Image 1 (cartoon, rainbow, N blue to C red):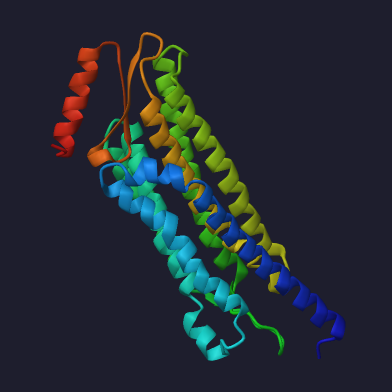
Image 2 (image 1 turned 90 degrees about the horizontal axis):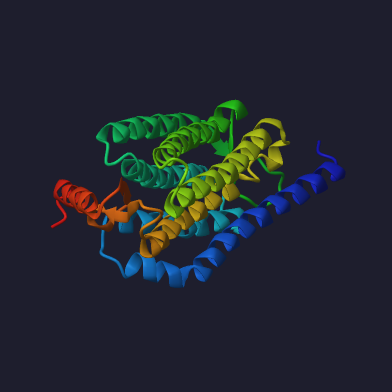
Length: 306
Protein backbone atom coordinates (compact mmCIF):
# COMPACT_ATOMS: atom_id res chain seq x y z
CA UNK A 1 0.00 0.00 0.00
CA UNK A 2 1.44 3.34 -1.09
CA UNK A 3 1.62 6.03 1.55
CA UNK A 4 0.46 9.58 0.90
CA UNK A 5 4.06 10.78 1.19
CA UNK A 6 5.17 8.34 -1.52
CA UNK A 7 2.29 9.38 -3.75
CA UNK A 8 3.15 13.07 -3.39
CA UNK A 9 6.81 12.35 -4.14
CA UNK A 10 5.98 10.40 -7.30
CA UNK A 11 3.52 13.08 -8.46
CA UNK A 12 6.11 15.79 -7.87
CA UNK A 13 8.86 13.90 -9.72
CA UNK A 14 6.48 13.19 -12.60
CA UNK A 15 5.59 16.86 -12.94
CA UNK A 16 9.29 17.81 -12.90
CA UNK A 17 10.01 15.28 -15.66
CA UNK A 18 7.11 16.56 -17.78
CA UNK A 19 8.07 20.21 -17.41
CA UNK A 20 11.72 19.46 -18.14
CA UNK A 21 10.78 17.66 -21.36
CA UNK A 22 8.49 20.52 -22.33
CA UNK A 23 11.28 23.02 -21.64
CA UNK A 24 13.63 21.02 -23.89
CA UNK A 25 11.08 21.25 -26.71
CA UNK A 26 10.65 24.99 -26.16
CA UNK A 27 14.44 25.36 -26.27
CA UNK A 28 14.58 23.70 -29.69
CA UNK A 29 11.65 25.68 -31.10
CA UNK A 30 13.22 28.90 -29.81
CA UNK A 31 16.49 28.06 -31.53
CA UNK A 32 14.60 27.37 -34.76
CA UNK A 33 13.05 30.84 -34.58
CA UNK A 34 16.24 32.79 -33.83
CA UNK A 35 18.27 31.00 -36.53
CA UNK A 36 15.56 30.94 -39.21
CA UNK A 37 17.02 33.90 -41.12
CA UNK A 38 20.44 32.26 -41.26
CA UNK A 39 18.80 28.96 -42.21
CA UNK A 40 17.03 30.55 -45.18
CA UNK A 41 20.27 32.17 -46.36
CA UNK A 42 22.59 29.21 -45.81
CA UNK A 43 20.26 26.29 -46.60
CA UNK A 44 17.18 27.22 -48.61
CA UNK A 45 18.76 29.87 -50.85
CA UNK A 46 21.49 27.43 -51.91
CA UNK A 47 21.31 24.64 -54.42
CA UNK A 48 19.09 21.72 -53.34
CA UNK A 49 21.22 18.76 -52.31
CA UNK A 50 21.51 15.72 -50.10
CA UNK A 51 22.57 17.94 -47.23
CA UNK A 52 19.41 20.00 -47.70
CA UNK A 53 17.33 16.86 -47.14
CA UNK A 54 19.40 15.75 -44.14
CA UNK A 55 19.26 19.22 -42.61
CA UNK A 56 15.47 19.35 -43.04
CA UNK A 57 15.01 15.93 -41.44
CA UNK A 58 17.30 16.76 -38.52
CA UNK A 59 15.85 20.23 -37.99
CA UNK A 60 12.15 19.45 -38.25
CA UNK A 61 11.63 15.73 -37.63
CA UNK A 62 12.60 15.83 -33.95
CA UNK A 63 10.40 18.80 -32.92
CA UNK A 64 7.42 17.54 -34.92
CA UNK A 65 7.86 14.05 -33.52
CA UNK A 66 8.18 15.38 -29.99
CA UNK A 67 4.82 17.10 -30.20
CA UNK A 68 3.29 13.61 -30.04
CA UNK A 69 5.59 12.68 -27.15
CA UNK A 70 4.64 15.78 -25.14
CA UNK A 71 0.96 15.04 -25.74
CA UNK A 72 1.48 11.48 -24.48
CA UNK A 73 3.01 12.86 -21.28
CA UNK A 74 0.03 15.09 -20.47
CA UNK A 75 -3.12 13.72 -22.16
CA UNK A 76 -5.37 11.96 -19.65
CA UNK A 77 -7.36 10.27 -22.45
CA UNK A 78 -4.44 7.96 -23.25
CA UNK A 79 -5.45 4.62 -21.77
CA UNK A 80 -2.95 1.96 -20.72
CA UNK A 81 -3.79 -0.03 -23.86
CA UNK A 82 -3.12 2.96 -26.12
CA UNK A 83 0.10 3.68 -24.26
CA UNK A 84 1.33 0.10 -24.64
CA UNK A 85 0.76 0.25 -28.42
CA UNK A 86 2.54 3.58 -28.69
CA UNK A 87 5.31 3.19 -26.15
CA UNK A 88 8.18 2.30 -28.52
CA UNK A 89 7.46 5.33 -30.72
CA UNK A 90 9.96 7.65 -28.95
CA UNK A 91 12.85 5.25 -29.50
CA UNK A 92 11.75 4.44 -33.05
CA UNK A 93 11.85 8.19 -33.72
CA UNK A 94 15.29 8.31 -32.10
CA UNK A 95 16.57 5.58 -34.41
CA UNK A 96 15.45 7.63 -37.43
CA UNK A 97 16.97 10.88 -36.12
CA UNK A 98 20.17 9.06 -35.15
CA UNK A 99 20.43 7.72 -38.70
CA UNK A 100 20.05 11.24 -40.11
CA UNK A 101 22.60 12.75 -37.71
CA UNK A 102 24.99 9.88 -38.35
CA UNK A 103 24.71 10.43 -42.11
CA UNK A 104 25.51 14.13 -41.62
CA UNK A 105 28.65 13.30 -39.66
CA UNK A 106 29.73 10.69 -42.19
CA UNK A 107 29.40 13.32 -44.93
CA UNK A 108 31.43 15.67 -42.76
CA UNK A 109 34.18 13.06 -42.36
CA UNK A 110 34.03 12.34 -46.09
CA UNK A 111 34.75 16.01 -46.71
CA UNK A 112 37.43 16.41 -44.06
CA UNK A 113 39.24 13.26 -45.26
CA UNK A 114 39.36 14.54 -48.87
CA UNK A 115 36.47 12.40 -50.12
CA UNK A 116 37.89 9.12 -48.80
CA UNK A 117 35.42 6.29 -49.34
CA UNK A 118 37.30 4.24 -46.76
CA UNK A 119 36.31 6.74 -44.07
CA UNK A 120 32.70 6.46 -45.30
CA UNK A 121 32.88 2.69 -44.74
CA UNK A 122 34.34 3.21 -41.27
CA UNK A 123 31.68 5.77 -40.35
CA UNK A 124 28.89 3.61 -41.77
CA UNK A 125 30.09 0.59 -39.77
CA UNK A 126 30.16 2.67 -36.59
CA UNK A 127 26.67 4.01 -37.29
CA UNK A 128 25.32 0.52 -38.04
CA UNK A 129 26.74 -0.75 -34.75
CA UNK A 130 25.17 2.16 -32.87
CA UNK A 131 21.76 1.58 -34.45
CA UNK A 132 21.92 -2.18 -33.77
CA UNK A 133 22.66 -1.55 -30.10
CA UNK A 134 19.89 1.04 -29.86
CA UNK A 135 17.31 -1.30 -31.37
CA UNK A 136 18.41 -4.12 -29.08
CA UNK A 137 18.22 -1.81 -26.06
CA UNK A 138 14.89 -0.10 -26.65
CA UNK A 139 13.00 -3.30 -27.52
CA UNK A 140 13.30 -3.97 -23.80
CA UNK A 141 11.25 -0.84 -23.09
CA UNK A 142 7.89 -0.58 -21.39
CA UNK A 143 5.60 2.17 -20.14
CA UNK A 144 6.17 3.40 -16.62
CA UNK A 145 3.71 2.11 -14.02
CA UNK A 146 2.03 5.07 -12.33
CA UNK A 147 -0.35 5.14 -9.38
CA UNK A 148 -4.04 5.76 -10.14
CA UNK A 149 -4.79 9.41 -10.80
CA UNK A 150 -1.40 10.22 -12.35
CA UNK A 151 -1.11 10.69 -16.11
CA UNK A 152 1.85 9.98 -18.37
CA UNK A 153 2.81 7.54 -21.11
CA UNK A 154 6.57 7.45 -20.49
CA UNK A 155 9.05 4.91 -21.82
CA UNK A 156 11.42 3.20 -19.38
CA UNK A 157 13.34 -0.07 -19.49
CA UNK A 158 12.40 -3.39 -17.97
CA UNK A 159 16.11 -3.80 -17.24
CA UNK A 160 17.67 -0.41 -16.67
CA UNK A 161 21.24 -1.40 -17.61
CA UNK A 162 20.10 -2.73 -20.99
CA UNK A 163 17.93 0.30 -21.72
CA UNK A 164 20.81 2.66 -20.92
CA UNK A 165 22.82 1.05 -23.74
CA UNK A 166 20.95 3.26 -26.24
CA UNK A 167 22.82 6.31 -24.85
CA UNK A 168 26.06 4.40 -24.26
CA UNK A 169 26.02 3.54 -27.98
CA UNK A 170 25.68 7.25 -28.77
CA UNK A 171 28.63 8.03 -26.54
CA UNK A 172 30.71 5.49 -28.45
CA UNK A 173 29.76 6.80 -31.90
CA UNK A 174 30.24 10.44 -30.93
CA UNK A 175 33.63 9.67 -29.37
CA UNK A 176 34.82 7.89 -32.52
CA UNK A 177 33.64 10.75 -34.78
CA UNK A 178 35.25 13.31 -32.50
CA UNK A 179 38.61 11.51 -32.46
CA UNK A 180 38.60 11.11 -36.25
CA UNK A 181 37.82 14.81 -36.66
CA UNK A 182 40.43 15.79 -34.08
CA UNK A 183 43.11 13.72 -35.80
CA UNK A 184 42.47 15.23 -39.22
CA UNK A 185 42.32 18.83 -38.01
CA UNK A 186 45.59 18.37 -36.12
CA UNK A 187 47.11 16.81 -39.22
CA UNK A 188 46.05 19.80 -41.35
CA UNK A 189 47.42 22.14 -38.70
CA UNK A 190 50.76 20.30 -38.71
CA UNK A 191 50.97 20.44 -42.52
CA UNK A 192 50.40 24.18 -42.34
CA UNK A 193 53.20 24.43 -39.76
CA UNK A 194 50.86 25.76 -37.11
CA UNK A 195 49.31 28.46 -39.31
CA UNK A 196 45.85 26.99 -39.08
CA UNK A 197 43.18 28.71 -41.13
CA UNK A 198 40.04 30.07 -39.56
CA UNK A 199 38.00 27.23 -41.10
CA UNK A 200 40.21 24.56 -39.54
CA UNK A 201 39.84 26.31 -36.20
CA UNK A 202 36.07 26.45 -36.73
CA UNK A 203 35.90 22.71 -37.43
CA UNK A 204 37.94 21.96 -34.32
CA UNK A 205 36.04 24.44 -32.13
CA UNK A 206 32.61 23.21 -33.22
CA UNK A 207 33.70 19.59 -32.90
CA UNK A 208 34.94 20.10 -29.35
CA UNK A 209 31.84 22.07 -28.32
CA UNK A 210 29.46 19.52 -29.85
CA UNK A 211 31.26 16.57 -28.30
CA UNK A 212 31.51 18.15 -24.85
CA UNK A 213 27.84 19.12 -24.68
CA UNK A 214 26.47 15.87 -26.11
CA UNK A 215 28.84 13.71 -24.08
CA UNK A 216 27.73 15.35 -20.83
CA UNK A 217 24.03 15.18 -21.81
CA UNK A 218 24.20 11.48 -22.70
CA UNK A 219 26.37 10.60 -19.71
CA UNK A 220 23.88 12.27 -17.36
CA UNK A 221 21.06 10.35 -19.05
CA UNK A 222 22.89 7.04 -18.56
CA UNK A 223 23.62 7.78 -14.90
CA UNK A 224 20.02 8.78 -14.23
CA UNK A 225 18.69 5.59 -15.84
CA UNK A 226 21.11 3.51 -13.78
CA UNK A 227 20.82 5.26 -10.41
CA UNK A 228 17.65 7.38 -10.13
CA UNK A 229 14.25 6.27 -8.80
CA UNK A 230 11.95 4.70 -11.44
CA UNK A 231 9.65 7.72 -11.69
CA UNK A 232 12.43 10.05 -12.91
CA UNK A 233 14.64 7.66 -14.91
CA UNK A 234 13.52 9.16 -18.24
CA UNK A 235 13.82 12.79 -17.12
CA UNK A 236 16.86 13.67 -19.27
CA UNK A 237 16.01 11.56 -22.34
CA UNK A 238 14.14 14.30 -24.19
CA UNK A 239 16.80 16.91 -23.50
CA UNK A 240 19.67 14.72 -24.71
CA UNK A 241 17.83 13.94 -27.95
CA UNK A 242 16.74 17.50 -28.69
CA UNK A 243 20.05 19.16 -27.79
CA UNK A 244 21.74 16.78 -30.24
CA UNK A 245 19.41 17.93 -33.03
CA UNK A 246 20.02 21.56 -32.11
CA UNK A 247 23.81 21.22 -32.04
CA UNK A 248 23.97 19.41 -35.38
CA UNK A 249 21.89 22.13 -37.03
CA UNK A 250 24.24 24.76 -35.60
CA UNK A 251 27.27 22.84 -36.91
CA UNK A 252 25.86 22.88 -40.44
CA UNK A 253 24.91 26.56 -40.33
CA UNK A 254 28.33 27.52 -38.97
CA UNK A 255 30.13 25.63 -41.74
CA UNK A 256 27.87 27.10 -44.41
CA UNK A 257 28.49 30.59 -43.05
CA UNK A 258 32.24 29.97 -43.01
CA UNK A 259 32.13 28.86 -46.66
CA UNK A 260 30.73 32.27 -47.59
CA UNK A 261 33.48 34.13 -45.76
CA UNK A 262 36.52 31.92 -46.46
CA UNK A 263 39.44 33.16 -48.49
CA UNK A 264 43.26 33.15 -48.78
CA UNK A 265 45.14 32.83 -45.54
CA UNK A 266 48.88 33.33 -44.88
CA UNK A 267 50.31 32.19 -48.21
CA UNK A 268 47.99 29.21 -48.24
CA UNK A 269 45.03 29.21 -50.54
CA UNK A 270 42.21 27.27 -48.99
CA UNK A 271 39.28 26.11 -50.94
CA UNK A 272 36.85 27.02 -48.21
CA UNK A 273 33.90 24.87 -48.95
CA UNK A 274 33.29 23.12 -52.25
CA UNK A 275 30.59 20.54 -52.10
CA UNK A 276 29.05 17.62 -53.84
CA UNK A 277 25.92 19.25 -55.20
CA UNK A 278 26.59 21.88 -52.52
CA UNK A 279 26.73 19.18 -49.85
CA UNK A 280 29.17 18.96 -46.98
CA UNK A 281 32.45 20.84 -47.36
CA UNK A 282 35.52 19.32 -48.95
CA UNK A 283 38.63 20.90 -47.49
CA UNK A 284 41.68 21.22 -49.72
CA UNK A 285 44.84 23.14 -49.09
CA UNK A 286 46.97 24.33 -51.99
CA UNK A 287 49.97 26.63 -52.30
CA UNK A 288 48.88 27.98 -55.68
CA UNK A 289 45.66 28.88 -57.45
CA UNK A 290 46.41 26.34 -60.20
CA UNK A 291 46.56 23.50 -57.70
CA UNK A 292 43.38 24.79 -56.10
CA UNK A 293 41.56 24.85 -59.44
CA UNK A 294 42.82 21.37 -60.32
CA UNK A 295 41.55 19.95 -57.04
CA UNK A 296 38.21 21.68 -57.48
CA UNK A 297 37.92 20.29 -61.03
CA UNK A 298 38.75 16.77 -59.88
CA UNK A 299 36.21 17.01 -57.08
CA UNK A 300 33.49 18.28 -59.42
CA UNK A 301 34.15 15.47 -61.90
CA UNK A 302 34.18 12.84 -59.16
CA UNK A 303 30.92 14.08 -57.70
CA UNK A 304 29.09 14.26 -60.99
CA UNK A 305 28.09 17.85 -60.28
CA UNK A 306 28.14 19.38 -63.75
